[in-house]
Length: 452
Image (cartoon, rainbow, N blue to C red; front, top):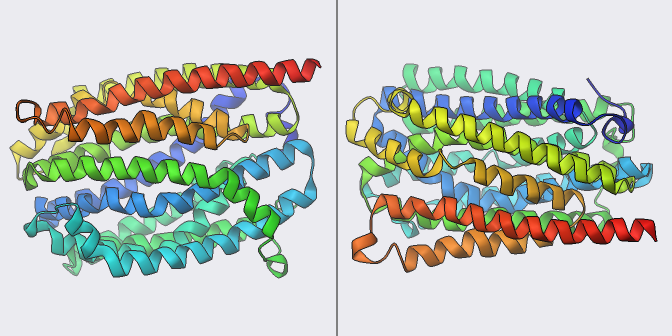
């Protein structure tokens, strides 16, 4: 269902926020389910080392990709604010700048990922029995980057316009194809990690085609006209101003996670397998919470464009309560049923399962703290203050974790997985507290300015 521009700016909020967030969450969960299918299929039919090979690439892929994904956040915020302000020209030019930028960025990512895969994985200390499979997966995966960027930019635009159903449908279709191709490539053709990567690339191409067609069929200010596809310097600059800090923030997160992954690698391939499987399960908690971040960003963006600042304050409160409840409940379920869930991924290593359970105790249980931080980040981005949450999270999360690894964790008596993973909940708590203070100060200034 395509909603009107006034949907986020008028009427009661709680029901609208929940109904908006649920399809966003389902979309993310579906994406993770299909990613999980990759690990499950390759783990059951190619062994735990193949799981480790795919898992070893996650942090470095996110590091390279997140910078450009941030620009899609900028596009979404600009569309939301433009709709709230009723500016057809700004929305039109943003849409027609975003998609060419997505293609160019995706091709650049392909060049970097294919040429530097082994170098990056070697820097991370990837184990010799895993690295060849990881290089193969990473190189093939990056061949689909242009399609992946187009889908992310297009989905961000659709959600900013209130259309949350279409991305869910498109991802479902692409995901079904992904699973089907996994079964063919891995089980029937015995292609291992290469088959998983090829299936992913094919599904990304389908999702990109579907989201592009949806934009071309719209009848509002977000409609895509292929003849108008050209980069507007002013709108690209604004997109970069809002999106680049989000991209840098994501990249810095990934740098800290690369160091975490490198530290996990130091415990051997068993730890790598357990951590990869646990991380995939924890991803379901994260993506459920991230749905409220995206909701906060788009609702805030439209109401900020409409100068309804008091409404933004209610949006923030509702999203914080909802994300805390969601994160606490799902995190506890993951930990309680941890061994059963990990057993779906790993069938040949009880030690890897135990390592995964250990990780869940430090990350899944307190994950709601990350959700609170994510909502504050989304709210500030929706208000156009993307640099502020970037600075706070880079210092509070990324820098903190790097310092933790090279100080506390490096001490012989504290060089344990538990101490390594403890850096997560501590950094989430500190960052959320600082972001909350910044938000309260900013909101006070906006409300005072509106009265004046």
